[in-house]
Amino acid sequence: MPKEKKVDWFSIANELHLKYKGKIEVVPKVPVTKLKAFAIWYTPGVAGPCRKIFQEGKDLSFEYTVRWNYALVISDGTRVLGLGNIGPEAGMPVMEGKALLFKYLGGVDAIPLVVNEHDPDKFMYIVKALEPSFGAVNLEDIESPKCFYILEKLNEILDIPVWHDDQQGTALVTLAGLINALKIVGKKLHEAKITLVGAGAANIATYKYLKIAGADPRKMLVVDSKGILHQHRKDMETLRKHNPWKYRIALETNPEGKTGGIKEALEGADVVIAASRPGPGVIRKEWIKAMANDPIVFAEANPVPEIWPWEAKEAGARIIATGRSDFPNQINNSLGFPAVFRGILTVRSRKMTDSMFIAAAEALVKYAEQKGIHEEYIIPAMEEAEAYVMEAIAVAEKAMEEGVARRKISRSELEQEVRELIMRPRKYMEVALREGLITIESPYPVD
Image (tube, rainbow, N blue to C red; front, side, top):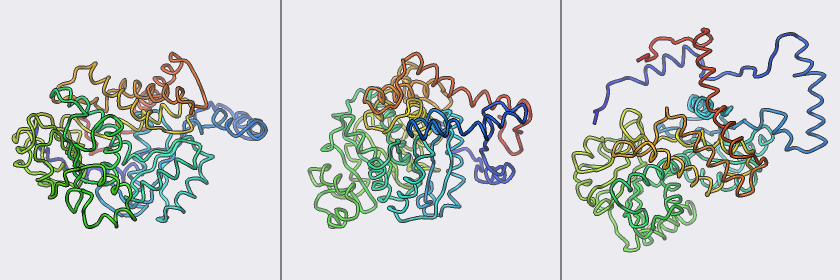
């Protein structure tokens, strides 16, 4: 397993962001060959679709405008990557990068938007006011526990899907990877002893979806910055009032009332899923040695995992996953959100449901299985476009099955549309590079 490569990605990114002055732009998708074209695309012709939408119903905006493929990527900048509360302006590069991933990996037109509003109710008012322009909403980099409240309430008041990638995206890919990892070591999800290190947005969502998929809460331990959660902790009343999501976990897990920290929580565990703070040294080699036979270690902190993969391997870990692309088994949200949004937007879904989430995870599991899973391949890689196609189709079909899709189409039509939309940005990139519309500037890594 390769050790850390000494590449200064921060300096490279600083230089290239300054050179390109942004990562996305708006380009036409309709033919404009003469001025008369604007009589169709703008005035007077544009009044035609305006009247149609006004007279026949707002949902027609999904058919006559780009709304059907528009996702809002919105953040208040309060929990950006591992940088914390750095504000909306400093968070904008991340939102813009997210929009780039949406387009290149899922064929989704995403608009990055940062807002200077920390009050959750006012933030939700802004999102609700923007709803007529978009087909789906991606919440991004919002601090915990506020993010849970915002997601739940927006799900209630919006008539378009809403998703918080730090919660659902991380949980989706983690679940898919874990299902295949357990198959390799010959263990069952409902029997596995699972320890979650970190109790922020990612792991609280991971806990929720592990339960839905069949994991037993009584066999689970969750560790936050104060130690293992249990129902007799001194801060339970504070949690009940200010973080009911973590409070419920404390009630449902750890029936024996085990106390201590990460070391104690890993004793005898089959699986550890860490989404806490950058390492190394957050998880130690000797703690991995105290886990059950053939332990599974997901160390997802970025840019440095809680324990280096080679250290975990030396300590006896059978399967190791991280959040990084330079190690095997990358657990990356980008395997989830582009395809999920591709699926819900293609059928104009009104909601994103838990069963659609599980369908997406199962599609990733199936794709990797068909390729052939092994200790260093439990989840598809980001360059495997066909995995996104399978995942998007699974989500779209579940939306139609559950009756939340505005549009119903056949499997063959769905597959054709999804594949075309996912491949389209790659074709654009080839043309843009060939024609010099996009140039490769130094120090871009060409190898």
